[in-house]
Image (tube, one colour):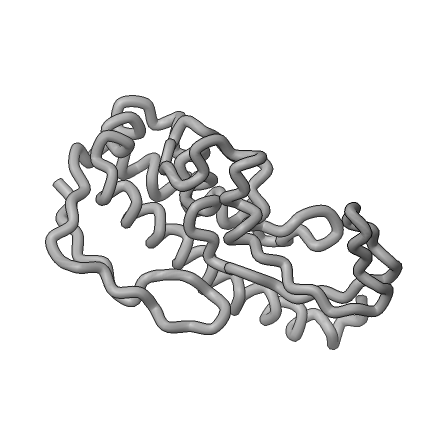
Length: 176
């Protein structure tokens, strides 16, 4: 990579990484406040933090969809073919709740450990910042698990209005 291209590449990582990590952390905090029994499990066993974060990403993917283009004909079966050079919309939100893959997909379960969630993309399109986001969330929620016994909602959460990301504009919680 040419030296002059490095700053632009780093900005490409920094901007999206901030929004998605912030939204992923906020979504987990909201889910734990909504499901106190799940927080009790994490509080009792901080080794569940990683699977709790993955489960939150599965249920409330910070990025709900992404567009791609096919490079060849793709046969989906039953006579359905997506032609080469077609634009397709990948819905991470739908794939992460596919009942053929995730039993009881709308249930938040910190023990599920969905390591195959598509929230970070997949294959050549996997998120380069996945490991950093995981480290940040694990550090934060492991520290919370060791010191915080309850997370409770004290008001109505408000969703962030955004075309691409799913997160919260405000989350009134009490942490004790």
